[in-house]
Each structure stands twice: as C-alpha cells, then as structure tokens.
Length: 312
Image 1: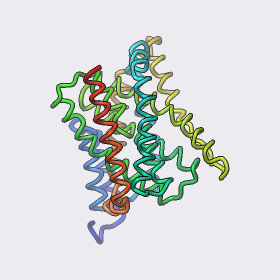
Image 2: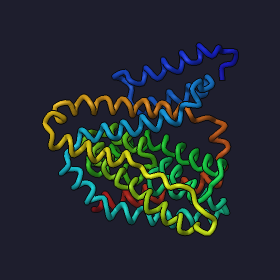
Image 3: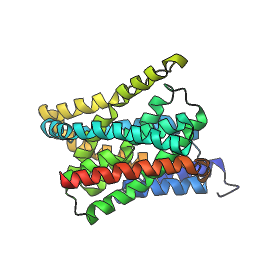
Image 4: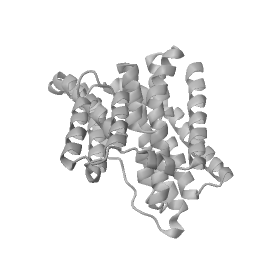
C-alpha cells in the first residue's frame, strides 16, 4: 500500500478508476481486477458507503437487464431450469453441511458457505446470517470465501465454455447453477454472449428466490434460540416487471436498448466496487478449512452441473 498519500488524492484515484470502468473497452473481469489493485495500492476512501452503493448498483443493473428480455423466452428458461435449480440447491446444502462436519468447521460458517454456494452467494449469506445468529467473524469468513471463488469464476468460466465448445444456452444455464453470486453470473455470461446473459440472469434470479423458503427452513430449525429478520430480495420482482414492460409496452421497448446499456455499465462498476472491497488481510483471515469446504462444494456443483448440461 502507498503510504503518505493525501485523502484528496486517494479519493481522486478511486473516482478516476471508477470512471475508467464505464469506458467502452472495460468489461466486468477487468473492472474486478482494477478494483482489487486499487484496494492494494490505496486505502478505500469511501468504505462507509461501499455496502449500500454496491447493493444498489447490482440491483439497478439486474433490473435494467430485464428490459432486454422477452417474457416468453424468460418463462421458457425458468421452466427448463426449475428442476435443475431445486435439485442442485438441496444437493449442495446437504453436501456442504456434511463437508463442514467432516472438516470440523464452525456450524454457522459451514452453513453460510453452503447457502452461499447453493443459492446466490453474498445475498444468501446476508439473508441467512441473522436468521441463524451468525456473528460478524463467521459472516466475514463466509463472504470472503465466496467472493474469492467468484473472482476466479469470472475469468475461468468463459475460458472453459469456449474450450468445451458450449453453446449460449448451455453456458448461460451452467453459469446460473455453478457460479455463486449474481454479479459474477451476469459478468461471466455477458462475456460469453447476449443469449447466455439472458438465460443466466433469468435462472439465477429464479435461484435467488429460494432465499425465502431456505431462510424459513433455517428459522424453523433455529426457532428455539430465536431468529432474526428474513431479508426478502424484492428487486427480483422489479426484474420480472421490467421483462413484462419490455415485452408488452411499445414505448418501453423503444428505449430498452439504452436501459440495458446503462445496466451493463452499472454491472461493470459493481464488479469494480466488489474488487476494491477485497484485501489480502481479508483473504488470509478465511483460513484453510472454510476455503477447502468452499472449493470442494464449488467443484461438486460445477462439474456435476456441467456433465448434466452437456448430456441433456
């Protein structure tokens, strides 16, 4: 980290880097790397606003992408991915809990990593953590594990998709099932193609809705100890409304291209912010056992879903 740098210069470097992310040549993976480099070189000048801005940008971007979809195509993708989604979620949760017990990882940490892998990464962890009364350290370790693997997926999946000669439909479905966080799913699939992006976003948000029943299940299991408030991902319903509006309202359809363009730039900026919030210290704090659990689960769901998709 560069020392003796003034707060004003630190803010300028950060904001200029963020501006670069909205330029035409920047894509999501590069923005993530740039954000991480900025976090290594300077202290994050807007740390207190990071969470709210990142959350808003991600939700705005996802809803904006809905304006580029057709309701009939979305329903078809959702129907095809439903059984796959249900099976993969419960298989991943079960495997994660068993791996956690075998490695003797703290129960809450193991549960959060399993839920993050099974459903939708950081969003699932944030929703389930208060339900199971996870402390700050357990939540941070789980988030760091998921985000580290997300970063790898953002680069690895498009490469493997081309290497395996996957088509747009196959790759979009694979991303939705095998990549943890919505931001990385959208980032990786957009790198592969527009059709892959549409399928991946639709199926991933269908998975994200499972936050609600899974949270209720954990709430029931932990009811003796009391539970926190369940966070419902309301922005997913706005995504559905955006799809309906772009499909049936001509005036909306006429400007949908511009909205989608802004949404993609918002996603790139979101990945920059996620990268800027990562640090070597946070990654070291994860420890080897939670990371092993995360990697084993990721390999299980990635390889298993890939084999099913290629042989469907």
